Amino acid sequence: MEGFLISKTLFTACELGVFDLLLASQDPLSAQQIAQAAGASLDGTKRLLAACTGLELLSAHCQDGGQVVYSNTEQARVYLTRASPLSLQPSIQYSSRTIYLCWHYLTDAVREGRNQYEKAFGVSSKDLFQALYRSDEEMMKFMQLMNSIWNICGRDVVTAFDLSPFRSIYDLGGCSGALAKQCTSAYPECTVTIFDLPKVVQMSREHFVTSDNQRIGFHEGDFFKDCLPEADLYILARILHDWTDQCCLELLTRVYQACKPGGAVLLVEALLYEDSSGPLTAQLYSLNMLVQTEGRERTASEYTALLTAAGFAHIHVRHTGKIYDAVLGRKEERD
Figure 1: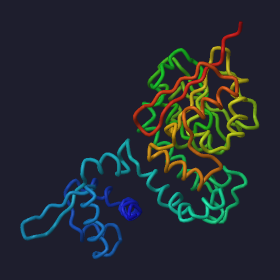
Figure 2 (figure 1 turned 60 degrees about the horizontal axis):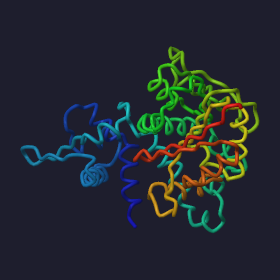
Figure 3 (figure 1 turned 135 degrees about the horizontal axis):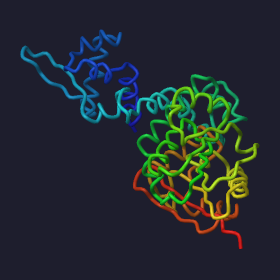
């Protein structure tokens, strides 16, 4: 019942820069020092730091004289400081300022069976991506979110299957390019092209993918409307869960038609158990899809059915043991 109290404690500590202040200081800091640096009240800061200590995000030490000072735990240093390569700060910011606001209307979403972007932000959700990318700032937040997720989970999903036979890869909706980087790192012989909307490609080029990575390219387009270039493998990572079954089948059919004979498509999603009894994370993500999108999380058999209907065969599922799993469907060789 009180899980949201924990979430907002974490969100607030990140937004005030508590973990970054402690990292930069290299020495433990008192509540007064943190409050002054964060521009916050001393009383409020003391309560926040105490709660973070209870959550084992901070360590508290009593100095001679009785003053309490605080330092980051190892977990906080790795995942909650902006400077860390595994930082979850972008995900936390997006959760706090976007997802949290949408979830205020979860009851309405369940009653109405549709997302709540219009109520939360006053933006029409007729065009999903117009809603998700309602401003450049919101687009950047979403891209940073995706970047942080694949920095942590990407290696697991791109190595769930041996993708080395696929030399030309298109990452449809590749966003920040973090998954493309994981692919080129795991498979030195492959090239990956990020296929995404023009504004997303522009931001990815400017902020996420360095020009010295010669094995990552870009292709501007809308994968529902524009021609998909021929490739050995197409990656759809956290794409299908945004859409209805009809839209998923339409997209997968377009991918099948573009795919080289003997090629494949890799789906990366949080898979539900076949009886939908878990995992809890996937169940909660499915509610989040209701609140934010037109889609939902699915079982392995549901994705298999969609792939089969689109023409793919020899479909295999790999559970990574992490948040995201992998489903690979192949296109038959020509007779």
